[in-house]
Length: 309
Image 1 (cartoon, rainbow, N blue to C red):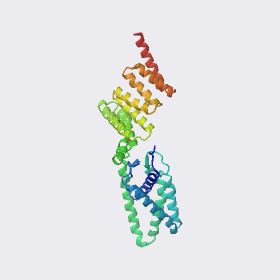
Image 2 (cartoon, helix red, strand yellow; image 1 turned 120 degrees about the horizontal axis):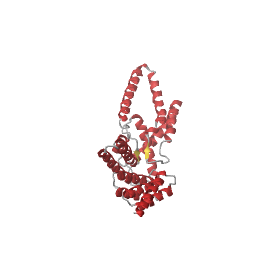
Image 3 (tube, helix red, strand yellow; image 1 turned 45 degrees about the vertical axis):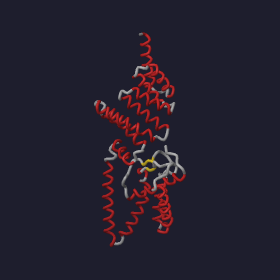
Image 4 (cartoon, one colour; image 1 turned 90 degrees about the vertical axis):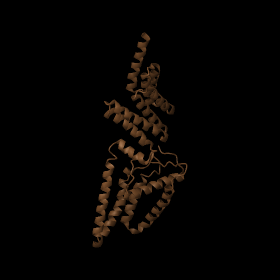
């Protein structure tokens, strides 16, 4: 979910993204899997954002002038601009201002222009060797930069750690890295190693807690609280888990997963009546949940046994 912005802020963010896409086509550094909205929304944006509006206006003026340079130039520019419009946050969607992975098609127009220009220069024997030498250096440089990014994309830990080094206020990076720590590292890779499992559960808890201040929608808060409760439950901290599930339910009273997981935590504390009530609510919200139905029968069985005793 995107944050609420004024018209001026919206134009500034779109302009900044537009200029960033152009610059990163030639200088692909400081790349990130997630580009978050600036922290200054509503309180004054960094200077680069209003400057980007001016720079974008200059680029658009240049594009209008470039139509005099032939149909190839017009085609390349229009191809890039039209496709780039589709990835700019003109209509804000999601929690990121940019996404490099969506620029492959727009960049076809840009590099068509570069290729066309290089081919024109290479027709002159004087420039042929310098042009091919320049293209070879660019190829090697871009190959090295691409290779360096492979280690960043190794897994969710390396990927989102890289994002957080650049954007420490990224909700999705804290949240998704926490999910990776809990579900992949703790519950799969180190499931049989209690000490290592505990380390990754605690790292997941830290990430979920750090994600919460940057949540911009009720759904994000519910997800963070629910995952936080799950990790605490896995550590045997039933009271801490219940507290997290309480916060999730306070945020959204129809969060079926929070009721279901709180029922497990209540059962862990042997509060069987509270556990039964939560299983009932979870089934009311999601009647097809077989886990809730099965475990409700277990709780009822325990309560029946206690009555007999």
